Length: 235
Image (cartoon, rainbow, N blue to C red; front, side):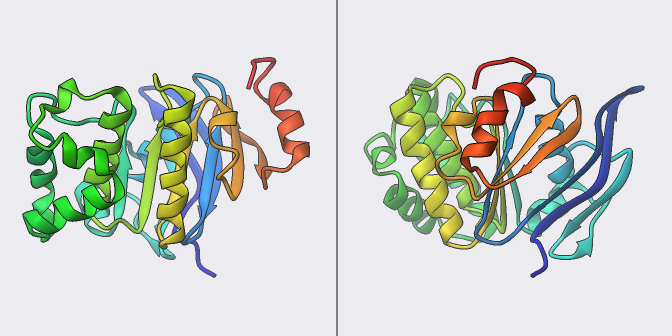
Protein backbone atom coordinates (compact mmCIF):
# COMPACT_ATOMS: atom_id res chain seq x y z
CA UNK A 1 0.00 0.00 0.00
CA UNK A 2 1.33 3.43 -0.94
CA UNK A 3 1.70 5.69 2.12
CA UNK A 4 -0.47 8.80 2.11
CA UNK A 5 2.47 10.86 3.34
CA UNK A 6 6.15 10.06 3.09
CA UNK A 7 9.44 11.83 3.82
CA UNK A 8 12.54 10.31 2.28
CA UNK A 9 16.03 11.23 3.50
CA UNK A 10 14.64 14.58 4.64
CA UNK A 11 17.04 17.30 5.73
CA UNK A 12 15.99 20.73 6.97
CA UNK A 13 17.93 23.70 8.30
CA UNK A 14 17.58 27.18 9.73
CA UNK A 15 20.23 29.36 8.12
CA UNK A 16 23.33 27.14 8.33
CA UNK A 17 22.15 25.02 11.26
CA UNK A 18 20.81 21.62 10.19
CA UNK A 19 18.07 20.44 12.55
CA UNK A 20 16.63 17.47 10.61
CA UNK A 21 19.12 14.93 9.32
CA UNK A 22 18.09 12.20 6.90
CA UNK A 23 14.63 11.48 8.29
CA UNK A 24 12.58 8.69 6.70
CA UNK A 25 8.92 8.61 7.71
CA UNK A 26 5.79 7.16 6.14
CA UNK A 27 2.20 7.09 7.36
CA UNK A 28 -0.71 5.16 5.86
CA UNK A 29 -4.40 5.96 5.59
CA UNK A 30 -6.15 5.36 8.90
CA UNK A 31 -2.90 5.21 10.84
CA UNK A 32 -1.73 7.28 13.80
CA UNK A 33 2.03 7.86 13.84
CA UNK A 34 3.40 9.38 17.05
CA UNK A 35 6.57 11.40 16.54
CA UNK A 36 8.24 11.59 19.94
CA UNK A 37 11.42 13.09 21.29
CA UNK A 38 12.87 15.63 23.73
CA UNK A 39 12.74 19.39 23.29
CA UNK A 40 14.89 20.59 20.41
CA UNK A 41 14.90 17.22 18.64
CA UNK A 42 13.42 18.69 15.42
CA UNK A 43 9.88 17.31 15.73
CA UNK A 44 8.07 20.52 14.83
CA UNK A 45 10.40 21.09 11.89
CA UNK A 46 9.54 17.64 10.54
CA UNK A 47 5.84 18.55 10.65
CA UNK A 48 6.47 21.91 9.03
CA UNK A 49 8.39 20.31 6.18
CA UNK A 50 5.57 17.77 5.70
CA UNK A 51 3.11 20.67 5.38
CA UNK A 52 5.40 22.64 3.05
CA UNK A 53 5.71 25.47 5.59
CA UNK A 54 9.47 24.93 5.93
CA UNK A 55 11.54 23.95 2.87
CA UNK A 56 13.52 20.76 2.61
CA UNK A 57 17.24 21.33 2.26
CA UNK A 58 17.50 17.83 0.78
CA UNK A 59 15.32 14.78 0.39
CA UNK A 60 11.80 14.29 -0.92
CA UNK A 61 8.22 14.76 0.19
CA UNK A 62 5.59 12.46 -1.33
CA UNK A 63 1.82 12.62 -1.05
CA UNK A 64 -0.02 9.49 -2.13
CA UNK A 65 3.15 8.38 -3.92
CA UNK A 66 3.41 11.62 -5.91
CA UNK A 67 6.53 13.75 -5.47
CA UNK A 68 5.41 17.13 -4.10
CA UNK A 69 8.81 18.33 -2.92
CA UNK A 70 8.89 22.13 -2.98
CA UNK A 71 5.12 22.54 -3.31
CA UNK A 72 3.64 25.64 -1.69
CA UNK A 73 1.77 25.17 1.60
CA UNK A 74 -1.51 26.32 0.02
CA UNK A 75 -1.18 23.70 -2.71
CA UNK A 76 -0.49 20.95 -0.18
CA UNK A 77 -3.47 22.17 1.86
CA UNK A 78 -5.67 21.93 -1.22
CA UNK A 79 -4.34 18.41 -1.76
CA UNK A 80 -5.49 17.45 1.74
CA UNK A 81 -2.61 18.19 4.13
CA UNK A 82 -3.78 19.95 7.30
CA UNK A 83 -1.33 21.26 9.92
CA UNK A 84 -2.65 22.24 13.35
CA UNK A 85 0.34 24.01 14.90
CA UNK A 86 1.39 24.28 18.50
CA UNK A 87 -0.57 27.06 20.18
CA UNK A 88 -3.91 26.14 18.55
CA UNK A 89 -4.07 29.09 16.15
CA UNK A 90 -7.68 30.18 16.72
CA UNK A 91 -8.72 33.81 16.36
CA UNK A 92 -9.28 34.87 20.00
CA UNK A 93 -11.39 37.96 19.30
CA UNK A 94 -13.82 36.14 17.03
CA UNK A 95 -16.64 33.96 18.27
CA UNK A 96 -16.52 30.20 18.00
CA UNK A 97 -19.08 30.42 15.21
CA UNK A 98 -17.06 33.01 13.28
CA UNK A 99 -13.92 30.89 13.66
CA UNK A 100 -15.79 27.98 12.09
CA UNK A 101 -17.36 30.10 9.35
CA UNK A 102 -13.89 31.10 8.17
CA UNK A 103 -13.53 27.51 6.96
CA UNK A 104 -16.26 27.90 4.35
CA UNK A 105 -13.48 28.60 1.84
CA UNK A 106 -13.28 24.80 1.55
CA UNK A 107 -16.58 24.86 -0.29
CA UNK A 108 -18.75 23.73 2.59
CA UNK A 109 -21.63 25.92 3.70
CA UNK A 110 -21.85 27.53 7.12
CA UNK A 111 -24.48 25.11 8.39
CA UNK A 112 -22.48 22.08 7.33
CA UNK A 113 -19.26 23.36 8.89
CA UNK A 114 -21.06 24.05 12.16
CA UNK A 115 -23.02 20.80 12.25
CA UNK A 116 -19.91 18.68 11.70
CA UNK A 117 -17.99 20.60 14.39
CA UNK A 118 -20.80 20.44 16.94
CA UNK A 119 -21.46 16.75 16.33
CA UNK A 120 -17.85 15.95 17.20
CA UNK A 121 -17.45 18.55 19.96
CA UNK A 122 -20.86 19.34 21.51
CA UNK A 123 -19.36 21.83 23.94
CA UNK A 124 -18.60 24.13 21.00
CA UNK A 125 -22.32 24.37 20.23
CA UNK A 126 -22.88 25.72 23.73
CA UNK A 127 -20.06 28.22 23.22
CA UNK A 128 -20.99 29.23 19.65
CA UNK A 129 -21.40 32.94 20.38
CA UNK A 130 -18.55 33.11 22.89
CA UNK A 131 -15.21 34.71 21.97
CA UNK A 132 -12.68 31.96 21.24
CA UNK A 133 -10.10 33.63 23.47
CA UNK A 134 -12.32 33.12 26.51
CA UNK A 135 -12.58 29.34 26.04
CA UNK A 136 -10.61 26.95 28.18
CA UNK A 137 -7.40 25.56 26.73
CA UNK A 138 -9.07 22.26 25.95
CA UNK A 139 -12.02 23.95 24.26
CA UNK A 140 -9.66 26.05 22.14
CA UNK A 141 -7.89 22.86 21.07
CA UNK A 142 -11.27 21.34 20.16
CA UNK A 143 -12.03 24.42 18.07
CA UNK A 144 -8.65 24.17 16.33
CA UNK A 145 -9.34 20.51 15.53
CA UNK A 146 -12.86 21.30 14.32
CA UNK A 147 -11.50 24.01 12.02
CA UNK A 148 -8.91 21.65 10.61
CA UNK A 149 -11.42 18.87 10.04
CA UNK A 150 -13.62 21.25 8.07
CA UNK A 151 -11.06 20.92 5.29
CA UNK A 152 -11.80 17.16 5.14
CA UNK A 153 -8.06 16.38 5.32
CA UNK A 154 -6.36 13.30 3.94
CA UNK A 155 -3.37 13.97 6.22
CA UNK A 156 -3.68 15.55 9.66
CA UNK A 157 -0.53 16.91 11.33
CA UNK A 158 -0.87 17.76 15.03
CA UNK A 159 1.82 19.59 16.99
CA UNK A 160 1.86 19.21 20.79
CA UNK A 161 -1.87 18.67 21.22
CA UNK A 162 -1.43 18.15 24.96
CA UNK A 163 0.49 21.33 25.75
CA UNK A 164 -0.87 23.11 28.80
CA UNK A 165 -3.88 20.82 29.20
CA UNK A 166 -5.04 18.62 32.06
CA UNK A 167 -4.49 14.87 31.60
CA UNK A 168 -8.25 14.17 31.46
CA UNK A 169 -8.73 16.70 28.66
CA UNK A 170 -5.73 15.30 26.78
CA UNK A 171 -7.16 11.78 26.99
CA UNK A 172 -10.50 13.00 25.60
CA UNK A 173 -8.79 14.82 22.73
CA UNK A 174 -6.72 11.80 21.80
CA UNK A 175 -9.83 9.62 21.77
CA UNK A 176 -11.12 12.00 19.12
CA UNK A 177 -7.84 11.77 17.21
CA UNK A 178 -8.12 7.97 17.17
CA UNK A 179 -11.68 8.24 15.88
CA UNK A 180 -10.57 10.66 13.16
CA UNK A 181 -7.95 8.17 11.99
CA UNK A 182 -10.51 5.36 11.89
CA UNK A 183 -12.43 7.43 9.36
CA UNK A 184 -9.49 7.34 6.94
CA UNK A 185 -7.02 10.21 7.33
CA UNK A 186 -3.35 9.56 8.04
CA UNK A 187 -2.45 11.27 11.33
CA UNK A 188 0.98 12.36 12.55
CA UNK A 189 1.10 13.56 16.15
CA UNK A 190 4.14 15.34 17.56
CA UNK A 191 4.47 14.93 21.32
CA UNK A 192 7.17 15.53 23.87
CA UNK A 193 5.39 13.50 26.55
CA UNK A 194 5.11 9.95 25.28
CA UNK A 195 2.48 8.74 27.72
CA UNK A 196 -0.02 11.22 26.28
CA UNK A 197 -0.23 9.48 22.91
CA UNK A 198 1.09 5.91 23.17
CA UNK A 199 -2.36 4.55 23.94
CA UNK A 200 -3.75 5.49 20.52
CA UNK A 201 -0.63 5.30 18.34
CA UNK A 202 -0.30 2.54 15.74
CA UNK A 203 3.39 3.28 15.27
CA UNK A 204 6.02 5.38 16.99
CA UNK A 205 9.10 7.18 15.73
CA UNK A 206 11.54 8.68 18.22
CA UNK A 207 13.51 11.68 17.00
CA UNK A 208 16.73 12.66 18.80
CA UNK A 209 19.00 15.46 17.58
CA UNK A 210 17.34 15.50 14.19
CA UNK A 211 17.60 11.76 13.51
CA UNK A 212 15.15 8.90 13.88
CA UNK A 213 16.64 6.67 16.58
CA UNK A 214 13.81 4.15 16.80
CA UNK A 215 10.66 3.24 14.86
CA UNK A 216 8.12 0.57 15.57
CA UNK A 217 4.92 -0.33 17.36
CA UNK A 218 4.33 1.05 20.86
CA UNK A 219 5.12 -2.23 22.59
CA UNK A 220 6.59 -2.71 26.03
CA UNK A 221 10.12 -2.86 24.66
CA UNK A 222 9.86 0.56 23.10
CA UNK A 223 8.26 2.01 26.22
CA UNK A 224 11.16 0.75 28.32
CA UNK A 225 13.69 2.25 25.91
CA UNK A 226 12.12 5.71 25.81
CA UNK A 227 13.98 7.10 28.81
CA UNK A 228 17.30 6.15 27.21
CA UNK A 229 16.23 7.48 23.82
CA UNK A 230 15.25 10.76 25.45
CA UNK A 231 18.80 10.99 26.82
CA UNK A 232 17.72 10.52 30.39
CA UNK A 233 14.58 12.67 30.35
CA UNK A 234 11.38 11.36 31.89
CA UNK A 235 8.52 10.16 29.71
